[in-house]
Image (cartoon, rainbow, N blue to C red; front, top):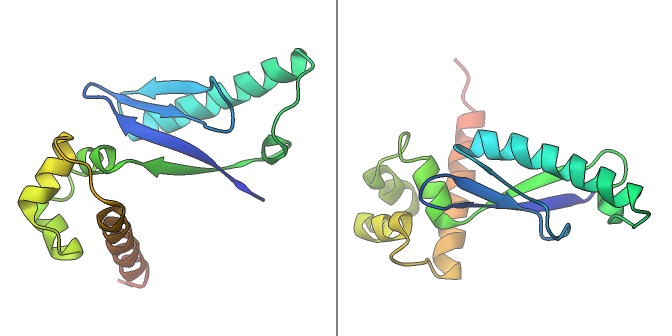
Length: 134
């Protein structure tokens, strides 16, 4: 099953989401959890309306579909700011705290290499945590 990308961004007051493969399918929410739920509802509504109009939907949305949520750096850092400090992000990514803060505020946008570095560090941390048994 092909994953359908949902892009999530932080707008300063809330989170917004859109589905590039379903033009016009957007949603908002006050947290990533709420925007994920809301975009699923929006997708179902969008698909229903598209089918009622006799239009075609992308093959990847027929039947059960799978979503992959793609955050921009600003959204991700703002979402996790209550869990990770900038110092913690520096330790796991090797990126300077000041730079992390610039990314979180949107004053600077990370280069693709920096974005990949953040993603890989979080995936490595997730893998490490999944291997823990208590």
